[in-house]
Length: 158
Image (cartoon, one colour):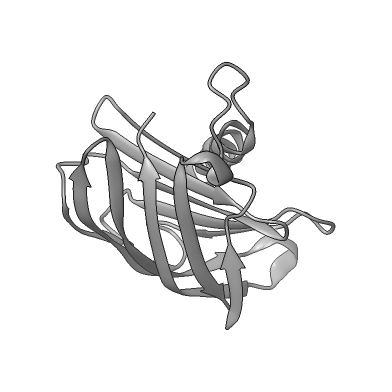
């Protein structure tokens, strides 16, 4: 449980960092940082507010924020274009978080959920691929899940 709490804290911090606009470069989804789309429980998701990707110390992280939610993905031990599986024993994580009340995060990790991230290209300063995952929130005694499908992204690496 302590590891899950620590993981959730890291993902929450990532969500805050990825959703912040960088004043010094004025980049956002509308000015060329990239795109991210998906379906959340069948409803369209479009990261029309912000997208961002970073690759540091062998970890690829990317996120997209839309008017109703945010998707965050972290791939430790990133080695380039490949398929990365969410679930034990992998440390790959994906989160869908509501950005309006009730603020709720649904996580797919080695503890809860499942899915995959497919990095198809990393060229010209952009990372591109697809994703799908089932993420869960186990707070309050009941587990509630969100299914994210048809995910696609092309985001400029910062």
